[in-house]
Length: 615
Image (tube, rainbow, N blue to C red; front, side, top):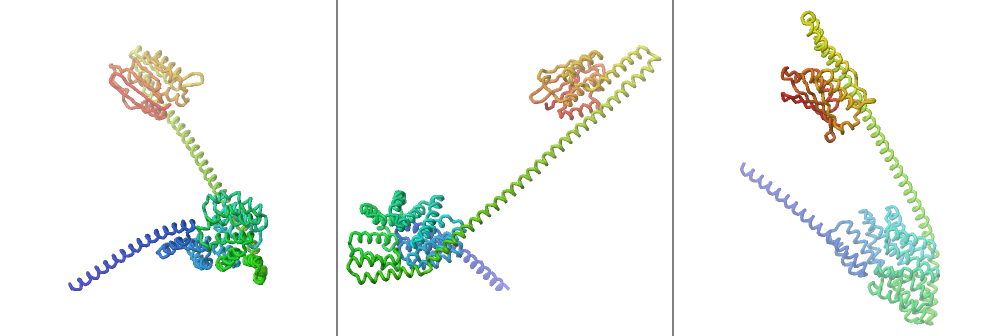
């Protein structure tokens, strides 16, 4: 049994050890992957800089090192695109094409559309430079369709420039100008200086091929300073090529010599087989022909011809015709005739090919695609506008509902306030009736009963009681009459009330009303409540406190109104002013109606009623 348990424990420990080892291994792999990715991306950035500076070989070495690392798919796609560009600039078109054939499907698979578009443009250039215009057009078409659909302005401009060159080489100048104009205007819109100058160089090249040499020179020299500021050798050579050719045709030897120094400086940093360098060799060959240095010219033309299979900078028929003229000038008429025959045959084969038809179809398809995209954009904008309008309507409806709810609630609150006010008024009336009923029952009725008894025993006392009954009835009748504020202020009514009480009962009632309170324009409802409170307090003081001196004070403390009624207490009569009853309940209800703080104090000598309320 123990042995079995021991075996199980060993198995568990072994399992845990293997699990921890696997986790550690995976973590280490993950760390290695992260390191590889960072290093590969760093090498990619270095390669981009070397490519831009013209050191294509060093760029390729760095790219190959990065591709051997375990880097992310996107980084791998960017590295492949940069490698394709480097080989294209070196003039190694066949090698570049093989890279692009693998790189484009991979970029599409991982949805790296920037890399895919860059490679489509480079592949179009490669096929164009080896004379396979059909394949070149296929990649341009593929790239431009994707660029337009994905609204990738940067690569759309790049491809417009590439297509402009293709149309120019086929002497379709109207379309070439159209695409270069599109490229330049879009480049200006997104502030892309390199592509803008590239498009401008294309327009200069188109004017040169049309024979408008003076216009070409004027157009190109106008932006030459901007080209120099970019310090980009590939662009410099692209710009100088049509400029030097135009000056050659105009016979401006000094200008050719001046700008040729810039071309030589730019060529030093580029591969001998690169497109820009070969273009300058073509110009130098033409210059040697003008100088009648035909042997040297032939050497240059021959080297250009030998590179034609790798990087065709001159159209094949033009190269053969130029070689034929050079041989003729050298006196080699047989060879010149053979070269010219080849030139005619090549020219005829180009005319008989369907490249012109394909270019026309491409142009039609592009314009159709452009219109479709414009319609789609308009539909999208219209849909967006409809959505915005719907949202606006929805917001307005919600806002309207909110306003209606607020208005309804305000109306409901107003109705509740009115109902509360009416209820308070009715309750006040009912309480007033109860108080008056109690006054009549406990006061007047009892006094009349006492008078009936006293009439038989003590006529003087009966007369006194009758007199008291008269005073009580008069007082009650005065209290029943509601105060009117039409032509009289609250302060005047209170003063008048105090004077009438003093005259009738012999109790001195002194009103003290501050100027600030007198200046207040209180609502009638609030003024009536204040008046009734003073009536109630004075009546209670006389009836239950047997007071001989009462002071009524009305004042303002900050934002609060203050009412203070103080009366002395008779030492000859028991204190009954503190007892609960209708009068005190009525006073509390009126204080609630005013939303006032009620304070009642009795120190044995004085009885104080104080209220504070919001004005």
